Length: 93
Image (cartoon, rainbow, N blue to C red; front, side):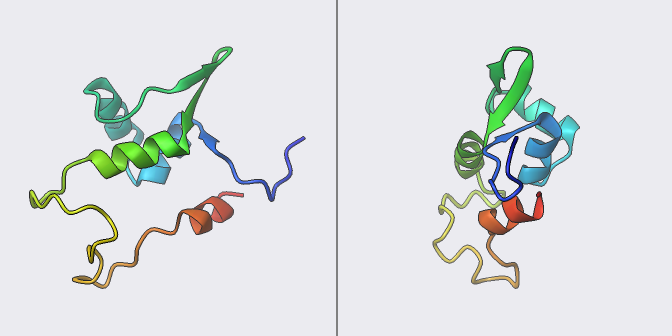
């Protein structure tokens, strides 16, 4: 039995799309074109690894063409707060 305080590392398709902040149709298209990772398989269950999703998101180009990586003042120019992965995981329990 899984302790509810234990964070998830493997996500279902809909959880993975939600984690990235996109719909499942966009998530599926991202996989089809190779921008997002394929799932791991456990018997017949498809599981997306959080680290694979984080890596794929970091490798996506910025809409402005700016090649800065996250953490380099990317949130200083707006009121937007940086994504808090641990808080998101805790809220999913």
